[in-house]
Image (cartoon, rainbow, N blue to C red; front, side):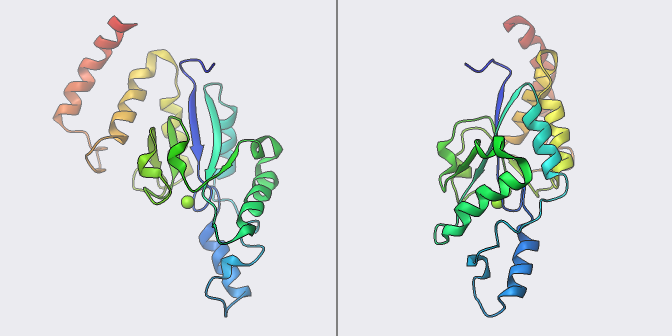
Length: 201
Ligand SMILES: [Mg+2]
């Protein structure tokens, strides 16, 4: 059974681990007359990793307080997408990560704490029970910002209130602002939180 500090983290592939935009451009150059050049073999296996993606995935994967999985939707009309996504993971992250590869168009059915994805909806992201780390957003423009977030939120015990703070901000109804959406009510709540924690522990 998972210990209480362990966080289950899901990571999307297209536009998150993989540079889909660049891959599509190269595929379009190879098949200029096709409306859907991504349908041809070579698209998914040929994509380059986005900067920092592999290093940060491995750092998260090696962290003692995480269980990390790849959670990616297939292109259901394109059978190559299934096999090439699997092969991409083996090529760039190794067989141990292939064992943690989940290909599904229903991301909400997987239980966990965090989903790192560039889309807020469409494949069940909006119904995922945990927190959505919206890759490419103002808060999380790149892998460096994602790593910074997890360096804070994965700190054990004494810093758990900071983790809760991040969670509350991510799940807040308020949209992102330069001060991460904190309003006076949040500040009041933050000031109270550590006291409550001490009593509960
Ligand atoms: Mg994506």
